[in-house]
Image (cartoon, rainbow, N blue to C red; front, side, top):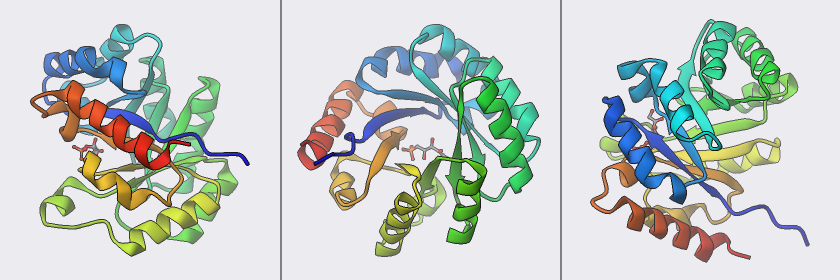
Length: 220
Ligand code: 5RP
């Protein structure tokens, strides 16, 4: 019987200062599989965030969380030339933006992640697959989370439907180790974690808690 790989752990750096983001990356990168220049970091400090993270972590998978909505080729070129492996494109972007970003991604052996945030449909998801997109991020927004939004059975059903369409799925939005059991029946490629790691008094211990929870739930 073949098993899916266990979910990976992605560190999202949403600092508003680049020195603080680099310090967190330096401290925690050995304990995570993927590092992300978060939207807040990119907007606060610009493309230098991606460049400096690439310099600091030459061999690491690096995501530029641009949440691109337009000008797919231009923004993809900016991110990939700065050293990103993957960039995010928001689900409300037109198919033409996905197509142009994907073309540039392929030229750089990179990939596009669809940021599922706000309204989208399974019909959209089918079109994204037809275009050749393979990765999606299921996202509970930080504002929605702050207003009390929990993961619902509808969320889990939507995640399963996306997996059935063939998407490799990342899950994010205020994730903590205690929340992981809710996702035990979902084929999760990665959990993307920002504040729970970067704002922890002991980020290394928190990363270990994530890995332990992942091993307990998905260990084969
Ligand atoms: C915000 C993001 C965040 O990077 C992502 O949700 C992870 O952050 P946190 O774990 O702090 O919610 O994409 O739009």
